[in-house]
Image 1 (cartoon, rainbow over the protein chains, first blue to last red):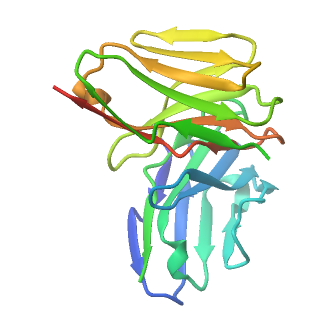
Image 2: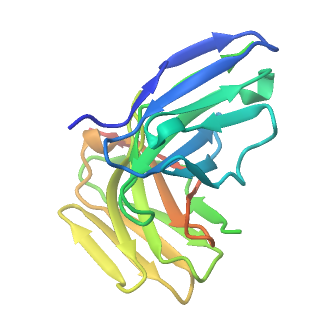
Amino acid sequence: EAGVTQFPSHSVIEKGQTVTLRCDPISGHDNLYWYRRVMGKEIKFLLHFVKESKQDESGMPNNRFLAERTGGTYSTLKVQPAELEDSGVYFCASSQAITSEAFFGQGTRLTVV
Amino acid sequence: GENVEQHPSTLSVQEGDSAVIKCTYSDSASNYFPWYKQELGKGPQLIIDIRSNVGEKKDQRIAVTLNKTAKHFSLHITETQPEDSAVYFCAAIDQAGTALIFGKGTTLSVSS
């Protein structure tokens, strides 16, 4: 069974540009989460989808971040325009139930210069 | 909301020694506490979890203890091996019960 996959693995963009991260969860997992880890800090929650609906987006830092999960399958996280402080590793995770094991992707390392 | 504190931030042990990582949480309603291991270049991977209805759980060399009264839980690794070297994260489910809130991580180094 394929795990959670994220694309790209690395992205280097200039301040002001747009970047779109993609996450393919494990097939059949209704719950999909986005997290971000800034260097040396904790993994911080961004938002949670249940199927195609946003269950909780309280962790989204500001309106430059837009997440979608059309059709309840893969998800995208767009940052527009990117700022220096957006640099970090963005993780996607999926689970069957909220309190069951969450499986993480390998992450996308975003560097804004 | 839920807040999770994790200590220490770094831990160095000799192969064969035990390692203990401790976490505290703020929300007494939290009821699920997983531990994740992150190796270089990979995403976090669940290694053990515990729910609030038990006080201890063990899986081979790894054990987790939970003290609900004190609101803290700990990861114990016995007979450490070099391949245990990684970043370990504790987590607790948040108040809404929808997302995991993570500690800042502990970088464990096991030297042979």
